[in-house]
Image: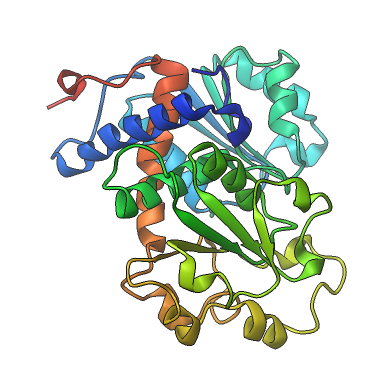
Length: 319
Ligand code: CP
């Protein structure tokens, strides 16, 4: 297993399936009365968040605690970062406190790579979202969710058709998903207005469509992306209503999907814009389940990076 998780592209097929299989073992804990493993007892996991988060921050904290690690939560707001302290000095402070793993979210693409490669931290570095670059654990929890629904929870995603829709340009979720879905054998279509596609998308292992209606009847999973208005400093589409009309998933478009298809969104959602209320809450929407699966997947990542490189034995469960 790799020493850090910085990009979904770091995972080859064997490692990606190992993480998903380990996450499946971790998920069995949620059915037990005591949802804990002793695997990371005596280890320290630092959650270093320079950007806002709800799902990722909480699920990494829950994951580390379920593995019995000591957890330190650092948020840039209210810290010495506001006095001008650098990433290097923040990292050296955490190292002095004996971090075995640092989970970092940062507004700058590449910040987790800097942390891992500069040698400021001895432990494992996990990218929890860097700028518009990558969000590898989101892609892993998405793959885990797709595998559970469409592959009986085993193997890879060979031949499945996944459609990723919306603000691909600003989406670290889309980038990580394209890498991982390709590694796991899925066929990916990205759908967006031309203004919300990155330069060089033609070199990605995807099919590009400007029409959402075209790929829907052939899709096994459709993944709606949040329109990231906070990262936009120009008009990328004429109006929210126009965007929603052309690229929003409403009930009419939902009816175009095959019966078995699932609807996904990484959250947070702009309800009424990229996804209609009724679709977000539909029984074929797996959006809440994605959040729950995030805990199992992040347990697997921490376990494999900090605790060892094998799946846990059932006897390791605390009863
Ligand atoms: N999906 C995701 O990264 O959500 P948060 O920003 O709430 O962590």
